[in-house]
Image 1 (tube, rainbow, N blue to C red):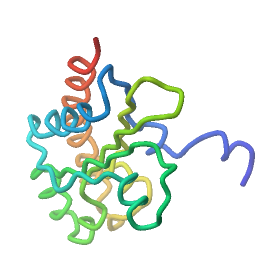
Image 2: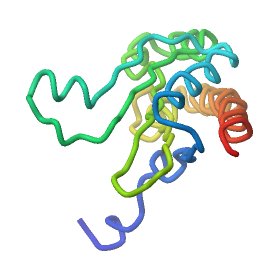
Image 3: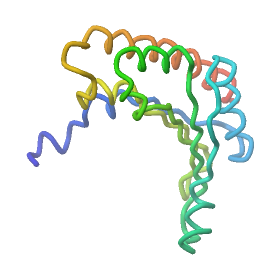
Image 4: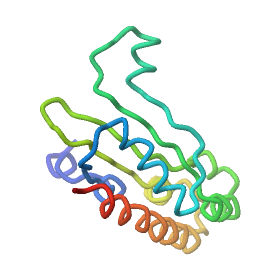
Length: 154
């Protein structure tokens, strides 16, 4: 890998959403989940990765980390309309986590639809439809993110 490639993340990673919250982790997870639901995302699952890893592997050195897995019906419908195999890249996931020595809770989201675009997962003749899907997802997630930032800060 060249030095330039190592320094420049792919567009999907570069455009990821990140913020921090002024609340305890145990309050942040349901707060972030509800903000998604208020924007019509359905919660598929909330999983505590740290608890899963400790329970299955015995490692107790993982910081508290939760995955909030959600899906929006319009995004799902549009993705399936482009190509049914794109559903394998859904749903959307937002990560809530802590870092040692940091008193803030972090919230991070990488767009599944941007990954579909950047990985070239859709058939070659669907670029415009994928661009529309990315735009719709971005618009919906912008609402979620603005609300998280507005209501999650002191």
